[in-house]
Image (cartoon, rainbow, N blue to C red):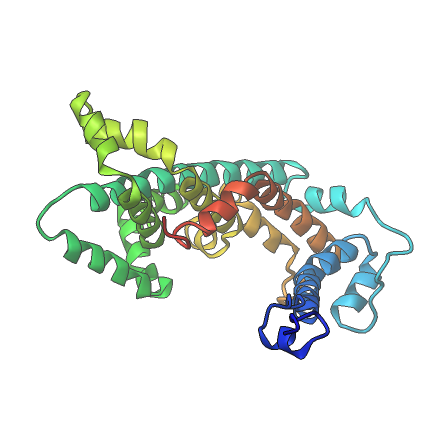
Length: 305
């Protein structure tokens, strides 16, 4: 009896031949990823190119008449001109807006991480009556849009005398947000109970366990909470516009409104794009610095084990 060979139909019928890799499928996925990347990068490229154009060229590009993909005569002086135009005093207005934004963002990030991690630890490790109901109620508040609580919060902060101060923008972040509390709670629930029991035997209370054991272990969650909070607060326009009324208290997002003229149109589009590029740089730098922890936080909970 003949043995099956590679050219024998019996050999092909047994299914022992190695299947070829689906190269077409991988090529299509790569093409889709490249197209999506170009689609996402194009607005940033348009903003950067517009920041290097003259006022006439930028106005033409904004009205979709003509657009230069590569500026023939880059106007790098647009950047210092844009920063000098912010506020009523050259350079001082930009410095004040930058300092206010840095202080508000730093306090919000610290408050968000501390409050969300502490509440998440309480939901994950403390046993008390009504815990599940309180957790479900907290998650349900995520369905409330910000516009519903905007007016009541403004009335409360006005009653406290906090209008035209940074406290209405900072204090709410020290009470946590449901999404990040949920992330911390899920992470803390996966930590072995034996580790917590060993700390209790050594005389640690709940606060020391949270500070000395839990926080060092949840760096991916802290990273993703800090990055999301930083980007949101740094680019927030509505909050500072409502609560900050004086020029010396304005943030960078509100300072960009200085380029709007009395008719509601943005004059000097090239200067506006230059100031926007400068404002966007810290967010890009932070993302690349914390990219590893950021991606690890996004993948948290996707794989069990």
